[in-house]
Amino acid sequence: DQGSAKLAMGGEFKDWLESPVRKVLPMDHVVFEPGIEMGERYINLFRGLPFEYTHSVPKSELVADWMGLMTEFDGCINIMALIDHLCNGDKKALEWLLNWFAYPLQNVGAKMATAVLMHSDVHGSGKSLLFEEIIKPLYGEYGATVGQSAMESQYTGSRSGKLFMLFEEIFSNKQKYDHSGSLKQMITGKTQQSERKFVDSYEEANHMNCVFLSNNIQPFLVEEYDRRFLVLWPESTTPVDLMQGVLYEIANCCL
Image (cartoon, rainbow, N blue to C red):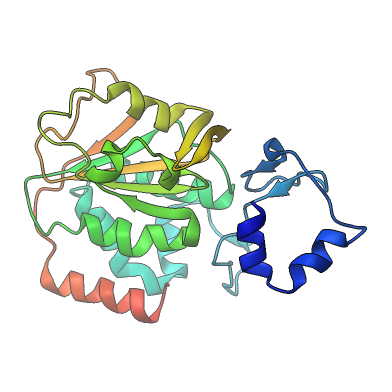
């Protein structure tokens, strides 16, 4: 509104208001469409990811096999070992998870039709370390973590304009059977409604890819043949030396 613009622009507000090149666009022309050139009649809220590929080997010359890539990116060996640890050494699950990580970063704005549910009664497995400290920072301002209070709120603005959402312990035992429909909508819906305080709700494109973490045996209802989820159950805590190696790589090599 004008009040907010005046506070932000100060003395320049009057110059902007009287400028002959000032444009007035309808609200539905303010969009969040990563990777798409919308033209001058639209304002695209996406400003790019915070990291760029800087490796000496061109992307086109990299091997496609993930095991071969490990020799090329030796600064992430411990991070790869952490992912393998969380997959309990299951190489099919590991490859699926790596592809799930890679595709939205290689094709910015891609909406995956699947989500990751990683839960376990083992504390200290390293799941929060992986997703909170390694994966989410790759998305910068377009990644966020949501807890139970945000999921219970009627306002959904925290999910607006996001590419990666990390959900941690989002439902109480009484609620975990009540939100099946809303979870399915978040994971596969092409659009989503954004509700904010004192602002009319509006619909926007849903580019959000979701990860759910929990220490509960059954954090929410997953139907027997539901293909929306990769469900992983880490079986052990992360060894201390592996944890230290991962923290070193985060601080000095990869991120």
